[in-house]
Length: 416
Picture 1 (cartoon, rainbow, N blue to C red):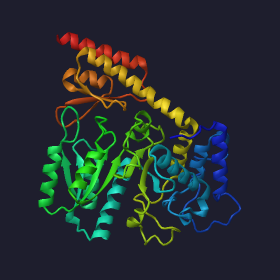
Picture 2 (tube, one colour):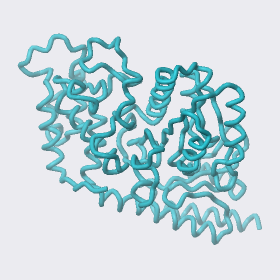
Picture 3 (cartoon, rainbow, N blue to C red):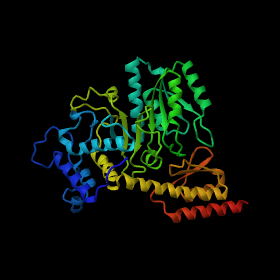
Picture 4 (cartoon, rainbow, N blue to C red):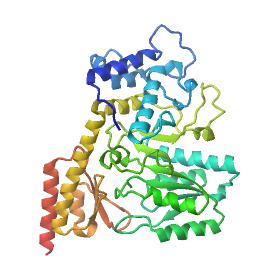
């Protein structure tokens, strides 16, 4: 896991060089057939002085379309947007190989609109894989995930006509219950489920809990059934690999076949920058042959995508470098650990994975007013909450942490 940091000037030069390789709608080339153009000049005028020093905003104004999956072959990089599409290709390679330890040029991927799309993209691929390779019928494919998983799982199951198999977790450790796994899968088999799309969480949204991918892989392997594991690392993808050097969530683990990692969480990129990565050989199961007018075809749910989003992710990773990013993520974990030590001294029960910056506190230890004052998120707004969570993001100041802990301690003393 290493890539050298670049200076702001190096990044600016790289992006502007890429933009020059794209065809410019304002240039001399006779572009007649592209159903797109630059941003409306009434509001987004191209001669704004700041643009010459703003590569991301310049890309937004130039409006490159990154439709397709550019890691598949040379044909998938369109001449019209060649410069910036190659940056997305470089981004996929960096994340797949440097962060998730993939073999050289053995992963495909694209910048999706977010984790929801990326998770559903995985489900779509594996559903079609089971249907085309094994003749599976819709009623024979199950989607396996824990009760703590993101709501994109039931959403995707609904869209793709998959059977939900929801596993229970231990209320304190948030680990998937082996008894529930065994009971639910055997019941599903009796109901005719033969193929399994399994979701392993690399940080659940509410708790920051991490599923045991090896336990899941071993279970389905010993069961001797067809399965594929997709990792939902929408939250944890850009922090966990940097804080846990023994992470099993890498492409060297044969159980991990694909992974989602959002840029607009830990990476602090604009919303609409999710990342989907998968081993080579699987995108063909969702190739849209009807997209005849697109060289290289389309393989994604979203279709047309903003090239500026890919550029934003590439820029942030490059300006920090691997060592800089590792330091930044470790700093957030250090702040989280400080909060946890104070909670322990106060006798407050909480859950936290030691490699992540989410702290879920049992709701019985604080009032709803206190939770609301600091914008803590409850695990339920329909029923009585059992947990409130803190997320130690870069904007969280030490003074805010101290103020919260003092208010919590005051409440606890008042109760006593």
